[in-house]
Length: 550
Image 1: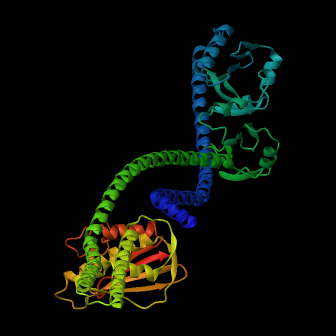
Image 2: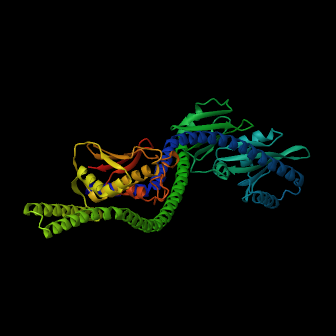
Image 3: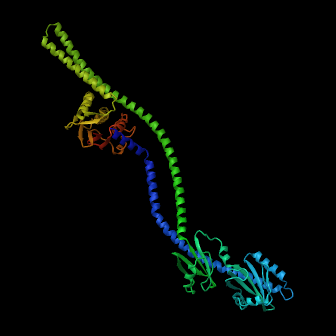
């Protein structure tokens, strides 16, 4: 009994929270789909990383091209300006130093600006002045000087070690002329190590290598100073536009600038990019799940509040309906009680009157007197049995005990015999081998009473159409349940209300009925008898089956 009670509580708990079971099932499906799609997300993010690397390389290549062109134009402008204002008469070193220093500071495009006047002087904007003839003569042997002197356009030269700055630089130079003749060279000088740092919008957490190479594949600048990259570049044909190389299992994209003089290479940490993307997805999922959990908690609190409020009202309502059902049953059985009591009392009264009359007339023998008295005693015993049956029927005894199924059914029929006989309705129990079950005898009879009363009223209401005025009870069992079927040939139950007959305040075919009998009968069958009450057949015959756990 404890196990069945526990099972019943668990069942009710599941019913109470079935909405949450659905929510958690939906959550599990959502998480499963998310997990399945994570691999696809990873593949797509990898492709995005590859495209990002290629696009970044192309963008930086274009950037470097524009970077060179813009600074070349500035230096070309400065060369024209210097050519217009300088002559042998007004080449004051101090004035020129101030001018080029102002040029360097104003634009912030170059680290320093230097001017070389043929066989005269070499000025640098950080207040350096060289006039030594030998040093000036040595400048003529430098690559930037030789390249620029013979070029009508600005030139770009990589200097491995600047004479004054003592580091690798990029010199963007243009000629200075006087009266149409070569007079000198002006150069904007940028430290090679500063070129890449001035490129904006680069995420150093993703871009793990960024380098600039010249037309000979020599590195001009790189944020990764390892020895491996120069070795790889030396083995690559210089005649390329775009290519990809592998460095330490990391793909590096390289693209030439439009001038084909330089090339830009980039490598990104694709694993870090994937990790960041998945972290962003995970954070979004976490936020959604947090919001979901909050909503579930709020829904649970609201559901619990409403459920308890509705349950209190339902319990109060069911208490009223239970009392109403009891009153209806009592009213229906009052007639039975009166008939059952009147018959033995009248019999006893008649026998005693006969004895008294015969005694007065001295016409009764001792043996006849004893026989009549025994008849009275039998009537009293029948009266006592009737009272006990009614007493047991209404006794509240929800505890389970072992009882005979046939005996319990027969005791109920004996109580209902008179009312059924008055309506000319009989009850037949089909033969079966009697057996005992452990359950609540009183509650079992309560449910059976509802079924028998319904069958009798269905037959009485349809007496003009049906002549078979009999209720049939069939009893079977298996290893788990006992099955009691109550069959009648009354008017049957309409199909459109078949699903509603066990609902509160729903009736089947009874116009005068309370409509609560079947509702409570099913409730008792499920909650107290640990079985069920179902409608097996609608009509010809109408069959209700009471299932009780053995």
